[in-house]
Length: 446
Ligand code: PA5
Image (cartoon, rainbow, N blue to C red; front, side):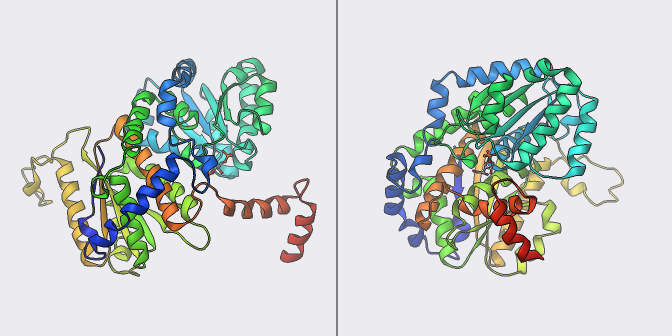
């Protein structure tokens, strides 16, 4: 199971301060499981692993994935925020780093609908001219501009390429069970659909079809992923002393650090495959906690890469940072440093050592340096990078996020701040229904 090590924060906060969160956290667990706390209409994610494994949704997803795999070299995932980050986080963590250059049994997954770049979309469709592909469009609300725009383009491209009937068989929509433009369009066009449950918010939706369909199409075992999450769900459902509960310890430690002025948490990985896991975590924590002028700012770095760009700031910049390192204990592959007769690079002292040993020493060296420089360090580790442990991590971070939000006394399940830019954008674009806002914004910018 996931392990947490907080020894490298104890120069900065007292262990007793962290432990003192125990009774409060037990209260928050109860509020979450009994659905009595803030945002309690968005707690569907709590029992999701168990519910998914007991339902026939997983087999429906697997059957749909199989059909689409057979007819696609490329699979396009259209969505933004919580409607794509979870899938991308899991797929990139599990897939070969160079899969696009190798023979694969599963389609290559690519992403659209997370930007409004004319170049990106145009280059994407140019590439799709040459490939057999299918697509899923994912939007809980069914009305988000970025994915709607990308889908309009790709739908037309598909219809021109394959004809309307075949196009509709290459499209899967994942949306609300009854509301929104995407649901209406899907019903009219006869697309296969999956439902985003009402009580699961976007950033908590990776274990629904939102994440599971793209992950299955990429060729990964979604049942194992959900089983890993279930293990964590069952753990969380039973009361444990805080010292034996990694979820509680993580929530308590980061909040203790926040109270001492450590306002930025940097998620650190030493494994490039985890870059998008960090992106998923950033959204989960940023959108859940950043409200009412409160919250830890979630940032991310990829080490050792970013030690050569961000390392200077972490070591010596403003002392408002702490790091949470996510470590994979054992790599999936084996490669050792070769011996070189000439040894002109001076690396023979490493010959015969696994590359991962060098990486782990880099990690330890960095932790010691950063702690010396005033940056506390939480270490979270999983045994290996596979579906089961990623499932555990997903549930671990979701539950710790909910508890952290309750400690901060905010609603971790809403995101009212996201609407501000949308209102301005619709006003600037002259969207019907926004006439008054258009008039006001034009005065402001003229
Ligand atoms: O977590 C969230 O709620 C958001 O990030 C949404 O997932 C994102 O805005 C996309 O929304 P929708 O799925 O409605 O298109």
